Structures are given as C-alpha cells and as structure tokens.
Length: 395
Ligand SMILES: *Cc1c(COP(=O)(O)O)cnc(C)c1O
Image (cartoon, rainbow, N blue to C red; front, side, top):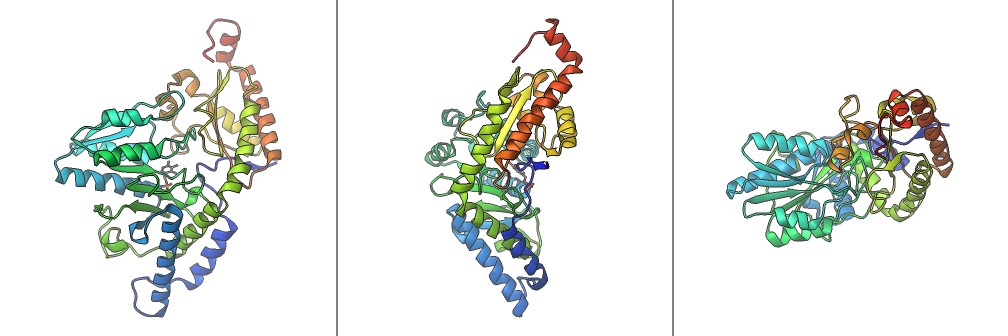
C-alpha cells in the first residue's frame, strides 16, 4: 500500500486545479499587461481569480496581492509592517517562538535593521494565549505576527481574539495562514486580520503561487522592483495559469470544507488513537483545537529520521519535524518551543492527511508505525538503557 501522509509539506494538485491550469498553459499565455486580445483575456482570468480568492478569504479583490508563495508573502508582510512602524517611530515586533522559518528568519533580518523582536512562548498545548499578546504590546509595537495554525503540530491559535486585541490597540496584525486556508474557516474581516499569507500548494494548488492579503490602507513595501504588476507592489509578469489554478483549488477547498474536515479528522483521530497505544509515546500539541489532518508524535528511545526511512520502505511518506528542517539533525524549534525535551524531540513523527486518504490507510499507518517503533527500539542502545533502568523514562 502507498500512503502519502505529508500533506503539510505539500499536496498533490487536485483534478480541478489541473483542469484549470493545463488548458491555460496552452491558451492563457498572454501577458496580462498587453493590450491585444490574448493579453486582455489573461488579464480577465487574473482578475476573476483575484475575486475568487478574495471571496474565499472575506477580503476585497484590491486587497489581494499574488506572490510566489507563502514564504514571499510572509517576507513582504513583515517588511511592510516594519517600514510602516519605522515611519511612525515604532520599532517593536511581537511574534512567537514556533512560527515558520519564513517568519522567524524575516524577523532575524529585521533585528539587524534595528527592530526589537519579542518572541512569545507557546504553552505545552501548542497555543499562544491572547493575554500574552495583550501584555506584550507597548506604545512602541508596530506589528504582531502569530500563525493561524502550526505546520508541525497542527494546533490552531485564537486568531480572532488576538486580532481583536491588536485592533483595539491600533497595532497591525499579520497571520501566516498557510496551513489554515482551505482547511479551516479563515475570514479576514471576522478574524480582525490586517495581513495574511497563503500558499497554493498546501491546498492542492500548484507550487510557486501564493497570496498576500493586505487590508485597505496598509502600504506595502516591495520586495521585487520592476513593472507595475499587482498595483505596483509586486513586479514580474503574472503566472496566470498558476494563479487561476490556485483560485480554483481554494474555492473547491472552501466549498467542500465541512465534508473534507469531517473525513480527514476521522482519519486523524483513528491514527492518534492507534499510536497512543504505543508505550512511552506522546501526542505533541493539544488534541483540540487541531488541524483536521495533523498527527505529531514523539517516541522515546529512537530517532525520527530512522522512523521515516523504515516507513518509506513500507510505502508511507511522512516527515519528522518540518520538511525545511529535515536533513539537519537539530530537533524541531516547534517541539522545543512547547517544552518537549531535546532527547525525545529527536524521535518525532509528523503524519498529515488529506481528503484523498482513507480509513484503510489510517489502519495501515498505525500497524506500520507500531512495527517500526518496535523494530527500532529493539536495536536502540538508548532504549535498552531505558528498559534496564540505566536511564529514566521521560514519557
Ligand atoms: C509551507 C509553509 C510556508 C511556506 O510556503 P511556500 O509557498 O512553500 O513558500 C509558510 N508558512 C507555513 C506555516 C507553511 O506551512
């Protein structure tokens, strides 16, 4: 059996997205800035996609900027809010310890530019409380950035409440909604969001396409200078087929959200229940509120990387930590942020499901992970020490 269970890293394109994109690669090749027919047709496709995306997010079309993905949207959002702050003499930025690296590394850069970065702690449930944000905001704060849902442990943040606090205090609020959009309800108006990042390939759209939403009145700073595309805020000839495929994928995901969420959470719950039977294991992050497709476990005494290799042999694609950090032997910054000790943070496994997975696959995954954990523990010196009492179990 083959089971793709790494949907938080990327998803396969849906039929709907493919059926939108492939014909457009043939016929929608016009440059949306050109005045002749094919150019103007491309422009129409582009603006229809902008309206579709805006509708899905509760935004206005002229608040939607197309980017090359979630990373670019995060970078531009943070830089823009920082520049707005700087013009007003405000230099403090509040974010959290468990953000995606697109946010954390942008903040590192802003720090070298003289901004004061405050990273909030995340509790052991994987949640940032609105009160923490309220307490951290000062007269010098120009931006709060808290992710909508975490990409490693799937925990969903109290975004509406955090947004409300920021709005009351007149601070710009950005959220990286890359894992949330298309999976759980996201509405920039209801959720008091000023800026938001989205990436197409996390909801069955193509890679290399994303969205930055910026509320009317927020002046963006360009990352890319050049032509006047995206109202002068993001130069470069638009990827019309990719953008249209993203819009189609997002609309499909939003239209089917309830049904998909029900199906995917049943798979998630079956896997969580199954893996919880493994001794000395723990689910990372609260069981609820959690993304419908996310399972993240630690198993004592073994390495995440070895679990992945063995699962790959059994036809299961999963990840340890996030795709961006795998390949390094450092434990995940997310697990460390929620207080998982170093020793067990190394033994983490993330399985992320989507609506094309099945309950039968869930059973196969549980059976396979149990076998693999047993096998690896049997040859692990660390495990032997734990079992013989030389070392103490942590979980
Ligand atoms: C995947 C991801 C990103 C990066 O998006 P890309 O389109 O791959 O650049 C940013 N933030 C989160 C939370 C993600 O999961």
